Image 1 (tube, one colour):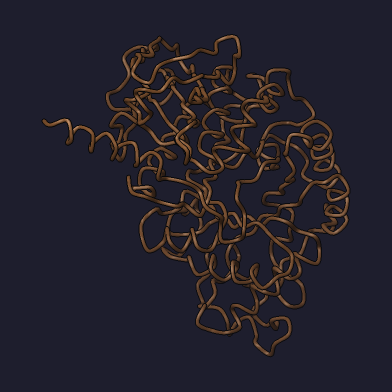
Image 2 (image 1 turned 90 degrees about the vertical axis):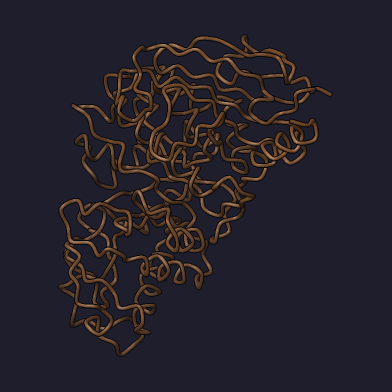
Length: 466
């Protein structure tokens, strides 16, 4: 093989890594949100009311507000579950919440308010009239009860968009800053309800409603949505963040478990490979890998310290939502250190918001990753810096996620930076994100090697030396 051909192959690989970037979302955002969500705490028995949410979010503001965590997001249960107001609009359950009052309180602490909704208008509201129109809700529906006590919309009827507008307009009046729309299809499992195979029109409807609003409202869609066309184009042109997996919470008396986290990481790997497709790509929607369970110790989170560090590294590397699911009133020292690490947040705030990490070294199996994987985010447009993640997922979780199936807990890595698309002739200063005492300098063609124990990760930022 000629030198010219070898050079062309090298440049093609390098260009592929450099090409995949995040661009501004349809809602005008250039990063994923950071903050806290209520769902996991609700699942473990927290009384879901304004007092307890304020207790959690006040702690978010006091402890993490200075680090950019500014979203307080309510999950399901904040609204009335069987009917809307006189116009069929979603209303808060005033026995447990006063949403305008909560929004004012959060805004006074420089926090933002997020709320959770699902598709359709309430079946019980069929005879009500869409606000500002003469359309009854029964006219704008398609007759399908989706099993969530709601009727899906007929988007060809002009009243459908009017209804979406009326819901978002009221949210804006209350001071809502983010809307999470769950049970979107194709993608969301039925989960015991009766979803249409394709209800993607609701995403467009709420996007249009947000777009006509003066208030900027972030739009998150959920869960484990199809990455196939034409749906991915619908998602990326109408929402700001997209759930790439199912819920992470759920374990025997704890918030999550390692096998579930492994699944979420594998789903991101499959997602980013499919949507980037190895071509020059600007991604205009950020991944939502679900909540971060890194703030509390293993007895509550279900994750060891190594596993929590793995989670934080991957969520940052992906440029994903950094939405904490932990008990904010009981953060341990290790969790607080992960959430406030200066090097990690520098990467999250200034690098992976633009360059998502991709798996390297030929790891393009569409359905199974590897026990040990090397990832790279970047290199930057000027080719001067990149973020590298080296991970061993071990054999103590869901081994069926991997090909080949792990037979041992440890994994050894051996590669050069040039193997993953960086300059073989450059010298790189490498910062170890979680351990500054382990910084090093390396030539691009110099072998980097080591052995990682179960659920151990190396998270590096490499900068070309002048």
